[in-house]
Amino acid sequence: MRRVLGLAILVVFSLVFLYRLYSVILSRDPGGLPATVLSRVGSRPQESEGAILLMRESESVIPRGASVVFVRPDQRNANLDRITFLVALGHLPRHRVLPARVLDEGGGGPDFVVTFLQGDFVDPRFELVRSFEHGKVFRRL
Amino acid sequence: MTGSLTSLLIAGATVVLMGLWCVSVPVCRASWSRLITSAFVFGLVTSTSWMLLLALLGIRWSVALILAPPGIVSLVVLVMVLRRGHRLPSRPAGSLALVPLLVPLGLLCFAAVQALATSFDLIFFWGVKGQRFVVDRGIDPNFLANPDHWTMHPDYPPLVPAFTAWAGILSGSFDWFVPVLATPLFGTLGVLAFWAFLRPFVDDAYLAGCTLLYACIFSTLFVHTYSAGNAESVLLFFVTVAGAAAFARWPTPKENDAIIACALAGAALTKVEGVAVVAALVAAIAVGRARSVVDFGKHVFRLAIVPVVLLGQWILFVRMHGFLDAYGGGTYGSFRIESFSLVARALLQQASFEFSYLPWIAVAALYVLGAARRYEPIIVAVILMAFLVYVFMHGEENPTAWIIWAGQRVLLTPLSILLVGGAVAMRKAES
Image (tube, rainbow over all chains, first blue to last red; front, top):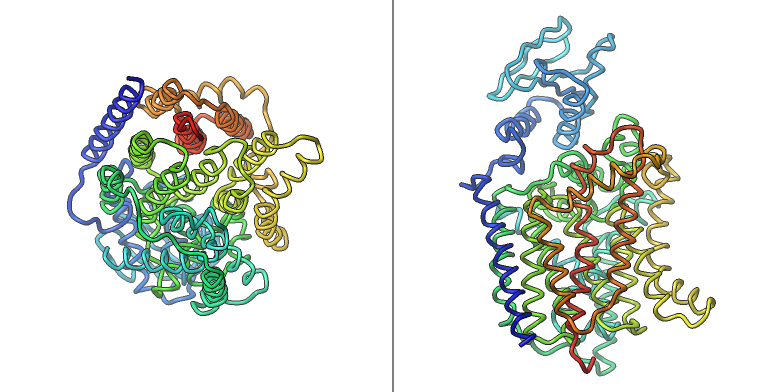
């Protein structure tokens, strides 16, 4: 009796967890194959996906070894600057990724700036090189 | 996606090759499921420590250099074991009982492929390190020691990035989906280890039920806590191997020491809290066996020497290059006793997994039903939880946000030990 009860409890709990797993998956809108590892997570998955796609596109424009800053110019703050820095650090491994604060420190600045989304980036030290769907690449004059 | 999966499977197969020397340990070759999980344990630990040694010596990684020495040693050991008349297990047995596991593991795989469970920590540090290890063909200490990179937790142990980097070196470039797909792989290995190491001691039907529950709980929680791509599934695999090998019979027989020590080394090389797993499990086993203080010391030495030496190798590398951080307490700030109630409350809240504490209730049900309850797994789990509380009590800022970010994931480790203990409570009377 105890054995049957034990097995029944194990099966019932397993089914409850399976149902939970199924519900969690459905709640995150599965679909076709995602373009990036972040395409379906976070509070703004389209933005996360866009940032990674922008990194891939920028990589082809920026020469290897060049210094790069990745920022979101319309929402600069310490937390967001840190996030964009880490995203660039992982996705531009053959470039010298610098934190966004170097833009505020004066001097020549980095060789390139990649700006996320279409927020205005106005800095007389840089000129636009290329526009992509998710952002722009600027080069130091 | 096919390319990512192929890279992962080739990396996994080569890790098994590098870990095949586990056949020299009789308990590891007792069944196919044990052989596969043990080879992964030995292979991951061997490849990571070998890659680390090469990094310490300043030698650039290459496919031949990483694979050939441990691979050849493994094959030589395999041939020697077979020539001594030992046989490998002839065929997988009882595999029909494992068929229901395909449902939770299949859903976990689907969630990973669909990027529904990706961890942001993959983007912030686990993946960044793996990517850099591939590009640098080694561990560039200047990159890790750069003060701008401190948010990457530079001294976090290297096993997971070393594994994903190995997949990248084999395929020519780092693939961000490899660590994501590694989560169902290590989830499956954890489930297999749970089955493999408990099987001789727990009634088959019960164990099949417990294994299904284990698979359902962790597949659900990996997805719920967005753990794909980070180190949780790898740590859980090592903890499950060590816990199951330690608690299946009590006191733990000495013949299990090699696999326990190796799995603990894997845990220590995977995450910082792996050190707490090593300390708690080694202490529990040594207390269970020891007849005197000297005896206690001998057992501690036998079990802890491998984890201590291998983690020491990493800490030596870190110290040599001046980026000691988490292991020196730098990440966490000063200890604040006044944080206790806040931390305990926040952690308790996270322990619900937003699912009415059901994982813990399921474990409690196993203990209530089992006739052969052992309290050592509970003590180990309590020590691990106390360690988590202690860690979260550091720092000047309110730790609530930190606990919300990481609390549920780090609670998976004590939960896995409790699940092993719950299954062991249903041991066959004769064992």
